[in-house]
Image 1 (cartoon, protein in one colour):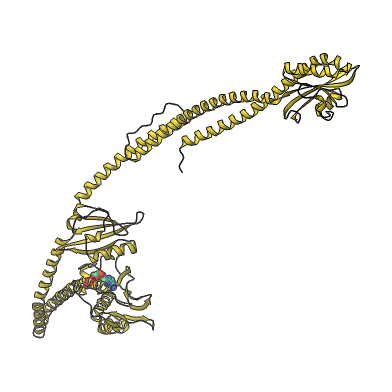
Image 2 (cartoon, helix red, strand yellow; image 1 turned 120 degrees about the vertical axis):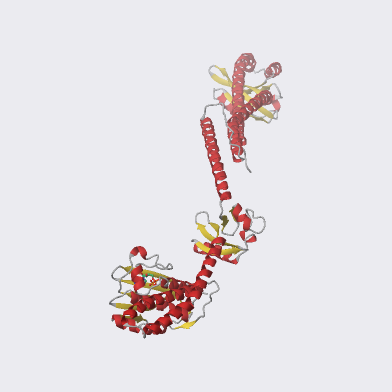
Length: 579
Ligand code: ADP
C-alpha cells in the first residue's frame, strides 16, 4: 500500500507522543503514590508519638480495658486503626477488633522492628480486617527500654481512592495534551508535505504538457532550492520543446515538399513516418502504426526490406507501382533499429533509357548489313588494285572492322542489358573453356611471343553457367591481356573459394593508371583513345564482361600497376544463382 509522506510523518509523531504520554503517566502515578504514602507514613509516625503519650500511663498501669476503650475512642475520632502490643507480641488493645480474639503479632515485620527500638513500616494485606493496610509501629519506651509497641495503620483503599481521583485528572490532562500535540503534529506534517505536494502537482502538470507552471514556496529552506531548480528546469524544457516543435515543423514541411517518397518503418514493418509523395503511390490511406505492406504491395520491396534488416546495410532495387518505376533505396538505422526507404521516381529516365537502347539496337541492326557489305567489297577489291591503292583499302578495312566490332559489341551489350535475358545454364568445366578460348588467340600469342600459364588445382568444381556468355567473357579479358601486353606473360589461375570459384587473369602488360581503374567497366571508356583504336578496341569489352559476371551473380575486380601489369579477379558462385 502506498502511504503518503503526511501519513508517515504524522504516524511517527503520533507514536512518539503516545509512548511519551503512557510513560509519563505510569511514572508520574507511581511517583505520586509513593510520595503520598511516604507523607502519610510520616503523618502516622507523628500521630503515633502524640498518641503514645496518652496511652502510655494506662499501658504501664496494666489497665488494659481502659486502654482498649481509649484506643477505640481515639481510633474512630482520627479514622486510624490503633493497636497496642506488648513485648511478647500479645495484642492488648485494638481500635477495630476485640484484642482477645487477635493472634500474636510478634512476627509482623513492623512490630518486630519496633520491638528492636526502631520505627517499623510495612504495607500488606491484613488478614484481620481483610484489606491492604499501611502500618507504622513505634516502640513504647520505659527507662530506655522497649516496653511495648503502638501501631497505627491506615487502609490503603483510601489512599488508592485518592490516587484514583488524581489519576483520572492526570489522564484527562494527558489526553488533552496528547490531542493538542497531535493537532500540532498534524499541522506540522501538513506544513512539511504541502510544498512537496505542490512540487508533485507541478511535475504532473509538466508531464501533461503545461510548461508554464511555476512553484513558489514561502519558506527559504532546501525545498525552496528544489522549487527554484524545478522552475529553472521547466523553463529549459519549455525552451527545448519550442525548439523541437519548431524543428519538427520545419522537418515536416521539408518532407512534405520532397519529390522523393520517404518511408520509415520499424523492424516489424510498422510505419513510423511517411511523407505526402509516398502516400501518393500507396494503395489506401497510409497511416502511422500500420504495416507498410498493407499499402505498398510489391514482392521486390518486401525482399529489399528483408535484406536491409538481415545485412544491416544499404540496398537499392528498382520497384514498380503500376506504371511508375522507382529506384528504392533502403538503409538500416542502427541505434533506433529503423528502416529508411527512399523512393526516387525514375519512370522518365527509364523511358528515355529504353528509347536510347532501342535507338542503339536499331542503328546497330541497320549498320550491320551495309558494313558487312562494305567489308566484303573491300576484300574483293584488295586483289584487284595496285600497291598504292591497297594502302587505302587497308585503312578502309581497318575502320570497317572497328565499326563492325562496335556494332557487334553494342548488340551484345543491349542483349545482356535486356531484363528478359535468361542464361542457358549448364555444368561447365572452366579449365576446358579457357583452354578453348586460348586456342583462338594462338596466332596473336605466338606473334608477340607471350608465355601463357594456367595454374589450376585438380579439384576445380564445375560451375553452373551459360557457356556462350562465359566464353565471351574470357574472350574479352584474354583479348585485352594480349592487346595491352607487348612482351612477357599471361597467367590464368583457377581456385575454389568456399561456395565460389575464383578466377584470376594476370598480364605483365602496360597496366592501367590508378585514377582510371574504377571507370574502365563503363561503356566506351578507354584509357588511351589512340592506343585502343590502334589495337581495334571499342571501349565496350569490359562493360560486356561486367554484365556477364553480374548475370551470373558474381563479382569482378581489378588491380593494376602502371608499366608492370594488370590482374582481373572474378568470383563466380559454383551453384550459379544468377538468372
Ligand atoms: P577496349 O575495347 O578499348 O579494350 P575495354 O572495355 O575492353 O575496351 O577496356 C577498357 C579500357 O581498359 C581499355 O581501353 C584499356 O585502356 C584498359 N584495359 C583493359 N584491359 C587491360 C589490360 N589487360 N591491360 C591494360 N589496360 C587494359
